[in-house]
Image: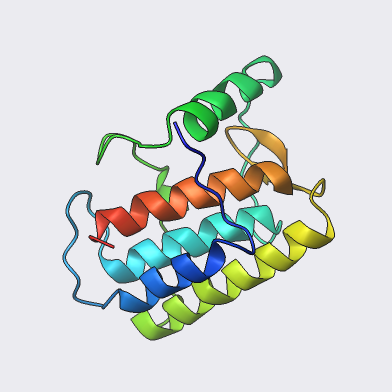
Length: 152
């Protein structure tokens, strides 16, 4: 399976897809509307930047296996079958436009941080402390999954 990345060379494609999203764009699966999906994406970026905290529920022996399966090998995730914890889908803090601009800002910040410090870590509950060079794949697959959810 091809890797889906978020980096300097791919970010403009993600940004263009997000710019095509509208508040009333219907979802193809799942329960989040466009605004809540953007808020969910932003929440995951906030984990990367250590701006929000979740309990580390990872098992060190399984971290690499889970990462490999979901972000190296099997990046085309089942539609609507994997549910994020409730804490990963907080209520939007602003309008659709506000959430969109905040996600776009997170994308820019992440790409800059990735280039500056690829070995810096951000915590993810399932994978524990995760270096930015792995977040590059996590964010790429995650963005792609949710943008496909809205037909983008």
